[in-house]
Image 1 (cartoon, helix red, strand yellow):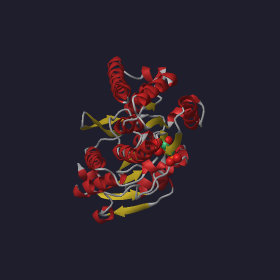
Image 2 (image 1 turned 135 degrees about the horizontal axis):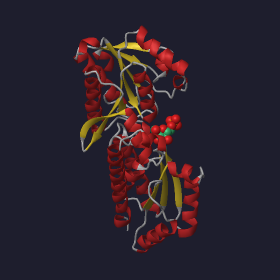
Image 3 (image 1 turned 180 degrees about the vertical axis):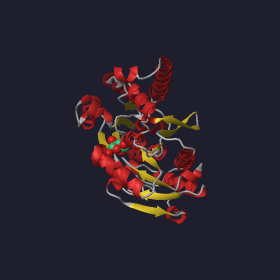
Image 4 (image 1 turned 120 degrees about the horizontal axis):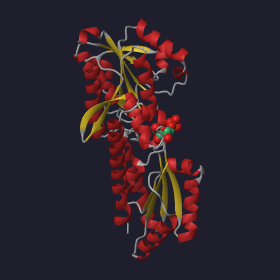
Length: 360
Ligand code: F6P
């Protein structure tokens, strides 16, 4: 089984996330443990198109478990999306005896993994993005750290809000997904959370906040997900909301944007633990002869999903699945996917309902 694998490559691609190093360490150590050599591929798929490789020993991944960022660096490589770039990447694998790849990143990374898999380089994906926006998995590495960083930052804002009886409107990174805003917002007791995933009524929210103010509340936190401004077609939506809020309520309001700061820092215990589990699983699958799968988590258990299916599931959840894609699925698959998407939406909405229930 393992004998057919002389060497595997590992790369990190797309936006970095805390815990990518922990996953890289797990992949490297798990492979070496099975007698397979490991090559680190630098700067994502770019390191395959323009070879930047380094043979990794156990020691090359020592002391990186607790480090943020990725020691392999990351890149969003446009050249790799073209057939010519792809062929260069395949040639790099062949010339360097790379028999399989583990790719750590988000959905763009997994599309690249499929491209390699169908061209004969078995590839397994590991979800690594702070956004937690990969529908096939309930968890992606880096999310817990990002949420905890957001909570720490907002707790600090709240201290000063309380002293000065102010409001802080906080825009929070997460691309189009509101998970970081939602979980951090609940954890800091935000007065309001604005996400793409749930309809929002500004007047109702303001009325609720004024009620809380009358009830003696002095500090107010409003979390807005990064994707909301893009969805409403106004890049300055969050800043403008802060101004409008101040005008309508008379509460002095400051605006803060929590962006790339959420992508850095030492990974939390949860991110390290899940990175260890997913890294080990990815190697196990690869050495078992599996390919074109993305590792994930459901009900706290490590699972794996075929990447094509995972990407369709993602588009279904985001309302972007095409008729052609639906036609490629069986009725059983479609109803299973719909049920899963509905459950994810329901879970999000249930959590969201806590805001109104607890914020007064
Ligand atoms: O996907 C991770 C992420 O940090 C998103 O939350 C954000 O929208 C995007 O990447 C930012 O990308 P960049 O680092 O290229 O500015």
